[in-house]
Image 1 (cartoon, one colour):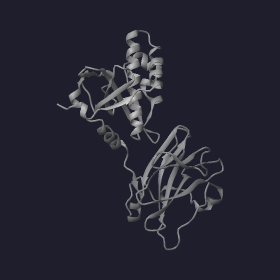
Image 2 (tube, rainbow, N blue to C red; image 1 turned 90 degrees about the vertical axis):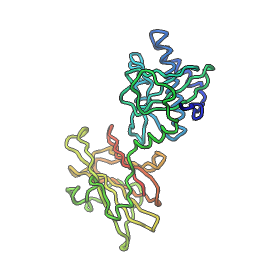
Image 3 (tube, rainbow, N blue to C red; image 1 turned 30 degrees about the vertical axis):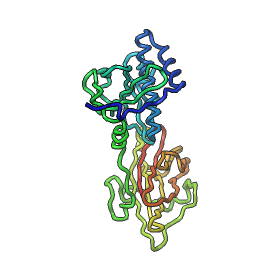
Image 4 (cartoon, rainbow, N blue to C red; image 1 turned 60 degrees about the vertical axis):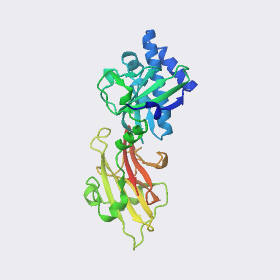
Length: 315
């Protein structure tokens, strides 16, 4: 049997969390439902604090437990795990009281979850103890000795993230099939359009003795504009052995111009916006240039209306 106290973690319950839980509880139609929602809300918020400490972001607004109608009808305590604007799935956050040796898992949460955490809400109402997690449940009552250390949750979430593209491999001719040669991807030749581009930084070019590699990936915008496709184009060359220059651009595949208000965004390895540029109605392409050292991570996003396409890279 696992000794859960060996890997449990105690965290405070903030005043803001208690107030939020009480507000949600007051919206329920019975004392039983109010207590259930109060406990579920506290569990979600405590776990959110823990995940943030671990560098994992969540999107409460996209969670069922944050929807007033769903809260009224179902017993859910989920929060959506977010990775650079992309959902990795929902984590269920359940609680038990001091002295209980099993945790209730309602059948409506047995599916569509990336994992289940169990917390003990302490009697003082001001702290909670994270006891552990499991990846799957199939019974209404989960015994505590089935729990894994909570640290394993971070590893499970990391495994859900897509592996970054090693752009340094491109110099060796190693490409995923979705990254095509520009001549194949783009119908219209692009150099003649350079005078109608939205640049937000000085753009350099590789010297004669530097090898340039260029690949593009098609992005379909047809859900927002009929028969509209664009290409995310990545051009790389090495300035020095450890420094790589990277030019990011978006070109139209269909038509001559980009749709207005399309954004090209670069995020640093912490998920913060490093650079961004937005297209105008007269732009044939948008672009900017960054550079980095070996091992650095960054992400490129193409954003249009509600569509966000993210590509993760490591140099």
